[in-house]
Image (cartoon, rainbow, N blue to C red; front, side, top):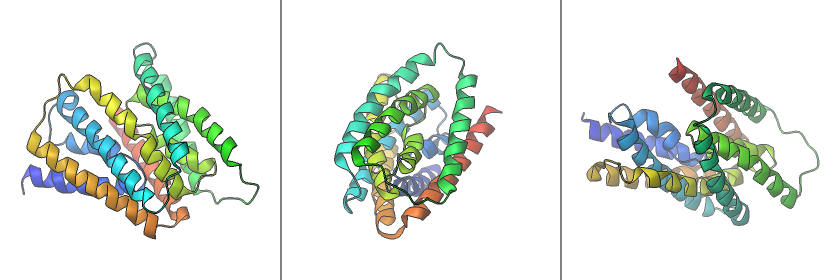
Length: 247
């Protein structure tokens, strides 16, 4: 079995799973493609950034088919994430990353714990206050994401759920919000990126189809409470992987 087939099949599975959660595929594609491509900076990162943007975009379209994208909130948050993420990328040159990682681990463990708690009854936040709070949280989340070199959607998605968005709508909003930062982050790589065009085009097609299919699966068949739990499991797995890579 050749590596091209393995990369294509694996990326399709990862794109489907990420699409189900309203995420771009980069969080899983980076470690996966690094097993086959030797140059992280010039091969893996440019490829995963373009895949992240396109899979997030097609996941948005998949959720939109069932009315699970609140467009006003999604567009506003996409502007906020796009403008805030570069701040973290700038600060990484001046702040010891170890201290930020401590903050990151505390935040994701809290979010994972919160997602597994049953939702208590009570007065729902009105839509305007909910959006204001989402904007406030999106700024430090995007800065932290830019600092650590991860997509903001991984942290933004659970925050949206905890603020009162239905999980499917949170996934739809999140998918659009992480699309522009992926493409803007690709720009600095364009002058040095090394592309295998056959591989790139194939992964783009497979990734886009998988993300759209995953979003449709969630929209049609996955209950909101189950989606929360799936995301909580994902946070635990990815945090464990992050700890593993540090050692």
